[in-house]
Length: 299
Image (cartoon, rainbow, N blue to C red; front, side, top):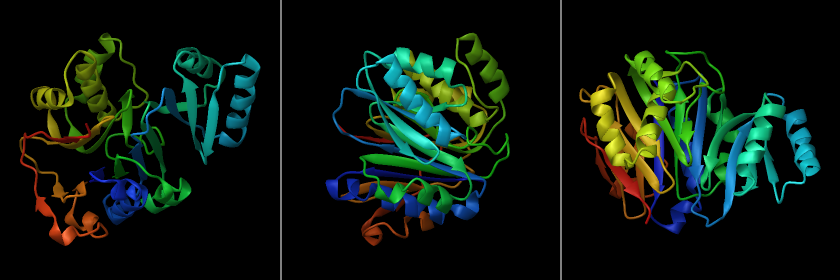
């Protein structure tokens, strides 16, 4: 049992409150998963910079050492914005591949949580309130975001095992459920050149969808394909640069609720996740159908 939340802003008034609203939604889902929690926040700011969210269990030394290293290498305009055990590294697109390769070699304890021009991911072991407070999620703004609170069943309780899982640029996935064929699917994806950092079945689902989209499918097509290729019980919320998509398996035994108003679209594992949302009493509220893809995108 895990808890999923998502919020898609239709108006600027929601964008300015995205972190506060999403954080409160996540905290409301605490009893569905006290092991770890995380959020992905998307910003629609126009930028030519690559944003890389990184994490280290030794951030007090690793991040200052990384800053010194980048200055010594004389890379152009790298910038590190530290947020507790995470940081956002802003890179020039031209230098980004070389810098990321250098980090992998010289800072093996620094983990890359996400890359893209829009996405930032913050996740850690602990209850949702501790994650929301630790990373000042309530102060964040954005066009949309998704979050997850985990009750571990398939793999260890670690930072890397927490959701969201990001396996492609500006892509991430949160999952409630359990996949029965993730080991065979993992082997198939490894043969296609995809590597994995955890034993979590949700990372396999995220990598599967990324592989589909890297080979020409859009989000809707990738999710539709998963209905044939993934076995088990699942509710997915998948984030992309433009928005997010929702899918439940054909049996749909995992709870899911959607709500839509003139100013936002919200997803929750339970209706109570919407309790703090503005004018929720005026929202259209429904349970998403099984085997049906729903998605909302900004133009």
